[in-house]
Length: 349
Image 1 (cartoon, rainbow, N blue to C red):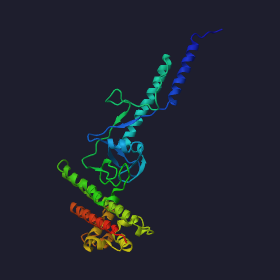
Image 2 (image 1 turned 90 degrees about the vertical axis):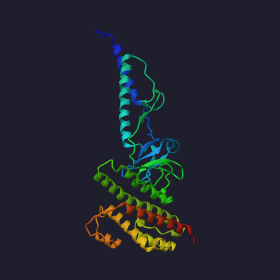
Image 3 (image 1 turned 180 degrees about the vertical axis):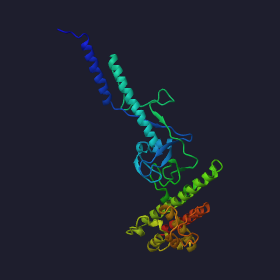
Image 4 (image 1 turned 60 degrees about the vertical axis):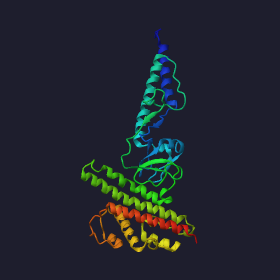
C-alpha cells in the first residue's frame, strides 16, 4: 500500500483556500466616496444626463444637509436623479480603480490566510472603504477634481438657501429644483451676464488673439442662453395664469417674439409692443433672430434673417458679429419685457 505523507494536510489547505477565496465574493464590499472640498468649501458635481454632463459645484456643508441621500438636480438642464449619480466621471473612474485594488487585496489576503492556516479575517459592516491620506483612522476615499476656472459664478437658491457654483447659466437649484428663471428673470439675466465681467480678468494673461476668440465664444453663448432664459420665464408666466387655460402653446413659441406677442395679446389683452414700445421690440427681435442664426446656421446670414429682423447691415452669406454692447442692450431689453410681463400677470380680470 502506497502512503502519501501529509496528504490530509494538503487537502485541508486546498479546501481552506477554496473557502477563503469563495468568501471574498460572498462578502458585501463597496467603496465609499468622500469628495474633498476646494479652498472655498465646494465639492464637484456633474450632471448625469448623457446630453448635458454639465460640471458644477455645491457647498459641501449645504450638500450634506440638503442633498445627501436625496435627489439632485442639474442647474443647467434640470435633470433629476439620485445624488449618487451626480459624482463626476473622473471621480467614478478613480473609484473603479480603487474598488479593483480592494478586490485584489482581499483575494491576495484570502490566499495568504489559507496557506498560513490563520483564522479568517471578518469584515464588519457592509462596505469596504479605502483610508484617506490625511488620517490613519479614515475609512473613505478622498478625491477631488481641479477647481473651476475664474469664470465660475457662485449663487444661492432664494428658496432653500443652497450655495452652488457653475460656469454660465443656472436655471435650476441643485437641491430643491426650483426653476430660477421662472421665479426671477432679473436674477437669471444677471447670472448669465456674470462671466462676461469675469472673463476680462483673463486679458493680458493670454495672447490677444486667444483672448478675442474666447471672448467672442462667450458673447455668442450668452446671447443663446439669454433667449433660453426669457423663454422659460415667459412660458412659465403664461401657462401658470388661469386666463391662458386651454391655450396649449407650441414648443419654443416664446423664442419667437412676434408669435408669442400675439398670444399675450389674445389672452391678456396686451402685446409686447404695448409693453416696451415698437422701437425696442424691433431691436430685441433683431437680437432674437441673431440667436436663431447662431443656433441653426452657425451665425451665417440668410435672406430669412434679413427679412425677419430688418437688418440691412449684412449681406447673405456673411457671419454676424456679436459685441458687448449688443449683449448688454439685449439683456436690458429682456429685463424690461420680463418686468412688463410680470406686471401684466399681476393684473387679474
